[in-house]
Image 1 (spheres, one colour):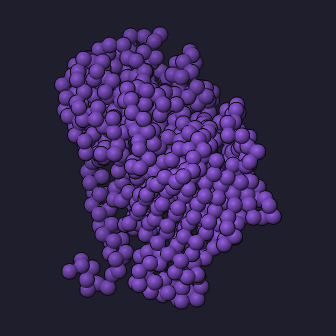
Image 2: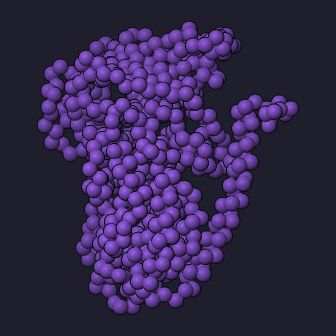
Image 3: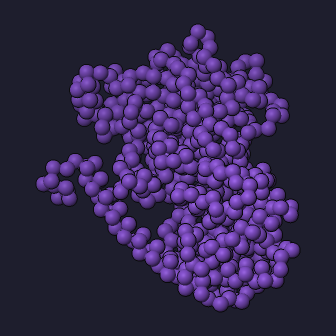
Length: 607
C-alpha cells in the first residue's frame, strides 16, 4: 500500500511531506553536528602545541594578481558583495551573507595576496591571519567547521613562507600554534563531514597538515584510508561526482592532486584508489572544457578560476586525452569540430542531497568558437541572493526548450524559509542521448520526459554539427507518444481551450553583439574575434531578440546580455521547430583573435 493511501494525497504532495520530514531530521542532525564542532573547537584551542614545518612549504594554489591588488587597496568583492574600506581589516567587513563568511573564513584571498607578493600584500596577509587568531583562535566563530578548517589550513600551510618572512619569532610561533590547534580540531571532526566537496576539503587538509607539521604524522594514515574510500565511492566509474557540477569536479580534482603530491614528496606511496580517481577524472574534465579553456557552466558551477584547470591537469601527470565522444561523462556530451566546441547536458539532474544547487537544464547546451563563447546558460545566481539563485536554476535560464512557466525539473518548496535547502523534487526519469556520424559532421539525438507527468509531452532535440564547426542545424519538438500521453495532453489543452505555449531560448554571452536581421527572420551575431554568425529558423515560431543576464561569481552585479527566443505552441500531438546557426560566408575558417577575452570571473567592481 502506498504510504499516502487514505489521506487523499497526490504523489507530489506525498513527496513534499516526505521531504519536509527528512528536512526536520536533517535539521536536528545539523544542530548536533554544530554543537560538537563548537565543543571540539574550544577543546582544540586549549591544547598547548609546539610544532614546526617539517620542510619549507611550497605554494600550490593559484591566485589572481588583479584581485590581490584590489584587496591591498581596500576594495573587497566577496561573493558578489562589494565593500570599499581602505583602512579596514578583512574581518571587519564580514556580513550576514553565508557565502561572504565562507569566502573570508576559508582564506582563499591568501592566494591573491601571494600573487601580488610585495611588501604591502605581505603585510595585509600577515595582519589578517594574525587577526583571525586574535578573534577566532579561541575556538569561536563561523570558521570552525571541518570543510572551512581544511580549506584554511591548506592556504596557511601553502603560504607559510610568505606569511613568516620578515616576521618575529613570536609571530611565527603564534602562527604555528594556531595551525597545530586547528589540525587537532580537524583530526577529531573531518569524519563528521557529509560526502561532497566539503569532505574532500576536510580530509585533504588533514593529510597536508599532518605531513607538513611536526608531531602530527599519526593523523595521516586514517585520513589517507578515508580518502581512498571516498575516491572509490564518490568518484563514479566515468570520473564524475554526484552534483554533476563541473566546477565542483575541478575543485575535488585539484584537492586530490595536492594530496597525491604531498604524499609523494613525503616519501609515502599514495593509495591506488587516489591515482585511479585522478585517471578517471582527467578525461572528464577535458570533456567539460570548452575551446576557450573554461568549464561548461551547469548545475551551479561557473567557468572556473582562470588557469586552474590547465594547472591542475598538468600537476596530475595524467596523460589522457578527452573522453570518447560516444560516452557521456558526468552526463554531458561534447563535440569538437574545427574551432567549435559544443557541450550538452544529456542526463537527468542530480537528486537528493546532491541536488540542492542543481539546475533544470536537461538538453541545454553551450557553444564556443575558439576563445569566444557564443551560446551559454545564465549560470548560478547564488552570489547575488536567493531570488537570483532560484531564477538561475529554472529551465528558462538555459539554452533549451521549455514550456512557458514550467521547468523540466521542479524545485521542492523551501523549508523554514531557507531556499538553500531546496532540492529538486521531480526530475526527468527517462533521458536518452545518441551520437552518430554523418557524411559531413556529427549528430546528437536526445530526449527527456520531464514534462510527461503533467502534460504528456516528450521533448526531443537533434543537433547536427558540420565537420569544420562552421554550422549547427537543430530541431526541437514536443510529442505525445502513447495513448495515455495523448489523453493527458487532450485534458491539458481542452481545459485551457488553448495550446501549450513553449519557448526555445538561446542565451548569448555578453560579449556577443547581436541584432535582428533580414527583415526579422534572422539574428546576426558578431564576436569580438571578428567572426560573424547568423541564426535562422524555419518560420514555424516567432523569433525575438530579448534581454538576458549572465550570472557569474566575482561580479558585483549580473551582466546584461541578450537571448534569441523562438516562441510557439504545442497545437497537436507533435510540434516541431527547426533552427540553424551558421558562420557567415565571408568569415574565414581561421581567425587571428588578438583581443584578450574578458573573463567573467574577474575581480570587478562594475557591471
